[in-house]
Amino acid sequence: MKIMAFTRYQKFVIALLSFLQFTIVLDFMIMSPLGAMLMPALKISPQQFGVVVSVYAFSAGISGILASGFADRFDRKKILLFFYVGFVLGTFFCAMAPTYPLLLAARTVTGLFGGVIGSIVFAITTDLFPYEQRGRVMGFVQTSFAASQILGIPAGLYFSNLWGWHAPFLMIVAVSVFVGVIILMYLKPIDAHLKMQKDHNAFEHLRRTITTPRYAFAFATTALLSTGGFMLMPFGSAFTVHNLGIAVEKLPMIYLITGLCAIVTGPLVGRFSDLVGKFKVFTFGTVVSMILVVIYTNMGVSPLWMVVLVNAVLFVGIFSRMIPSQALMSAIPTPDSRGAFMAISSSLQQIAGGFAAVIAGSVVSERPGGYLEHFDTLGYILVLTTTFTWVMMWFINKSHQSTK
Figure 1 (cartoon, rainbow, N blue to C red):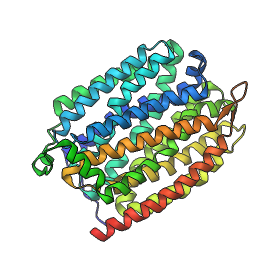
Figure 2: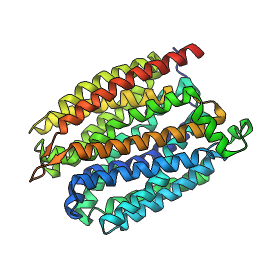
Figure 3: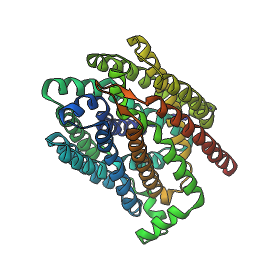
């Protein structure tokens, strides 16, 4: 199969959206490595920390549902800027929060705005790039996860060691302001979908999107796909330090090396998705993820090289599921309902992830000294949900192939 080349403007959009996603992803991912510092600093339990993580997801889910009826009624550039400004303000409030209740409130504000941005980015991607290019586009955009590992998380941990856990949020605010200015000045209007609108009432548009059968099945699949990260990620640093026996000072090195592997993997996975088929790559990622999750969650005290290796291969599996699944999902909505579809999908994903974080917090318990009990149980739960999502994605891929 011949690979379609990107235009110069398309390359700019990919770079911009990737950098934007970097700030959004970092805002969420920074909570995991900060967990080992936040819990003693604010005197909170693993259950309370799980609530800090999940409140972002719940508020993002509610916001996405409320915004979905209006998501296709505005220029996507304008709606992106609106929510991005709110995200920056929410992150600033996180930096200023001196107590657990205020941090909880700040994370709620951040989720209300930041949780919708990912859906807007994917709607823009679907508008500007044909299906044959979307695997590579998703691959580049999702390298934001790896970039946050390589640059953001080590820098965030460094600044937090110097100036406290508030500092990484200020770093995110500074980078986000720069990104927002670039969007304002150089991103072209994205409004072709406005000419295709059939619903003049926002609530009718929301109702029609929710009740479309193929959309509903896709929503359920996306929600289930999100449970893994929300179960394991919030306790990743605490598990690494207290269960695997890795010193806190070594965490930046782990994030750096695994991030380097992931930043190479993302574009390659995207390219293979476009070349050999998105579902085939998703199947590969599913198998790798299930095997590595079981290994990872059952590890005891381990040498640093082994922890790095397992994390790196696990990221290959995660990316090999995430990137092709998003490309497959992008083919489902029609142009006039892409914004609403993506917003609702993102909302259900966030809400499901919030429940997953709460469940994980109730499953995991902490011994005196910080050792986490029952972390392996989360791995077995994740294997079960991963199996279900593979079956559901098989039906989605089959449906897409039949409509070609």
